[in-house]
Length: 294
Image 1: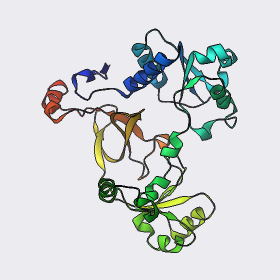
Image 2: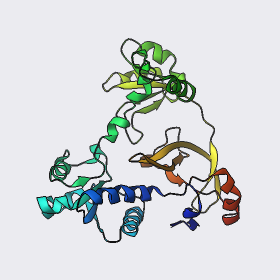
Image 3: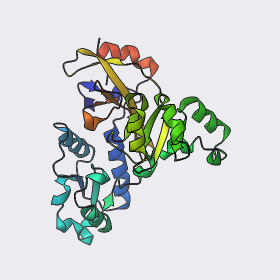
Image 4: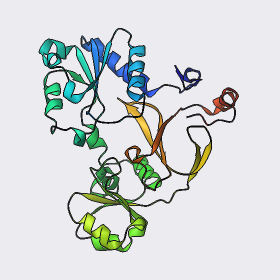
């Protein structure tokens, strides 16, 4: 598959995240008579130009006998909720739980219809920020083996739950922490201590929710190419990982020049970091001289 002019199949690790979704659906089709894929989002969401079509094209390319529909949640056909049609339908969700305009009623009907929903909301459990402190909590560390404990202590910034009992001490050292509401998303309720005064932090942390404090690791800003492939300095960067049903296919890079909290919904840019082996670097430079491969 050529992505932005680069044939990623020439990389040993060059598997697109889209390929992982295709593989998941292909496996599901062996167990079910799935004839169509419905990609749904909430009405009014403005995705980057061409993104939906790019995703749908990748699905059609990987499964050319599969009907692929792009629909808003409120336009989901009632006919597809009938038992026979639902059994032949796979659904891929693109929205967050808090973005559903009807409190989730329409999506609940889709799930209850018997359609194969690729991604429900179990990821909210995996993505909860309470994991940040549970891995340091003495009550649970006994569940980890020696290798896991070393990985936690060496690679993860220390974190703890913020409670009424430790709030004052946490605020006294606020410049050392970033405060996060455990179910927050889209960059909301992520407060870098050094950027807020004590009174503002106390007010926000006291009004509700469950909060954790994590050691703040200052990061260097980096220069990245803009849309014209000109280097622009001052980007703050965070990394994620593409993970589909126990398959991993490279890193998600997000970057912004607007602040320390990096989020796509607040204007950050996103890219896929193509994984390739050390021995392939020379060949990569020959194919793309002077350019960063993303």
